[in-house]
Length: 201
Length: 211
Image (cartoon, rainbow over all chains, first blue to last red; front, side, top):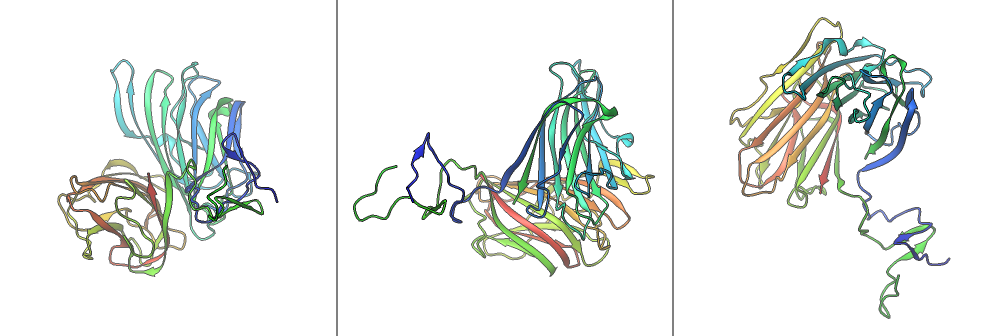
């Protein structure tokens, strides 16, 4: 078999490395780009391979002004996004005119054994420079013994020019394996943005 | 890709689409490296000790990250905690000062809160909470992360940050934040996790080095 040669500083046709070579503990599994999309769904690759999955999202821009981004979980591969969840939601904010600040719990944005979507941002503006970004951690989704813990932190460019720092945590109250995650914007709107899914070994 | 000196082994050998005899490849993103995984099974404690069982906890990495996943207590309403120690000491009683706050919400939807939670330390030497009253129902656990910064430094204190999600004994979800420092300039060599006054029935803790 021919020895492979360096091709623009890369090695072609190499599909495996020796075990002694560390490839890092965090692996990018999938990148999806929303472009006037109503949903972005990750329906494959969420299994027992990793004990933690991390979703990083940025440049989330709703088509309609004043909309929150949201997610839900599925235990049937994405046929239904309706897993029962209990969550907390709190935020800190500050406006651009330096006239309003707050840190507080937001009762309207949490879930108590709810099966609907969970907000993970505040109401983002749809201006050309307005968006939300952050990350969501999902622990051991394939466990069939325990609930599925998750938490997120995001920054939102709020519709009326506030910086919102949003914290969400909770658990999917099911012992069925969670194997799909869907992101969307409230009221069925469309959005742009990038969402990446990583597995953490 | 050049040939090595006469008589020297080949630098790289291409075998069945794999690279043999290579133990380091620069440029690969390994800024976060899994060092050790410990799995609890009715365990009194789980400890990561530098130089033991392949654990590296020294100046190799400036940041160490621990992910604790589905830590399930044997008894009900138990506090998952951690402490550190230095040298070959095994008392796990380093002085620490911390701040702690929580958000919570119950499944009955009649109780929510965001506020300071007095599970902190002020120059204490006990273990630091990483959960709030974890339930021991079959599906109840706590999961989260702990970052420990520059533990081998001999000039500064040792900072840490943690966040966790707990399914509590009374069916609340608790979002716990912990920040603080071990008030010592001695290098840390070990970290221990446990359920206070109980055993860890099940759970996995992974230790990473972050470059």
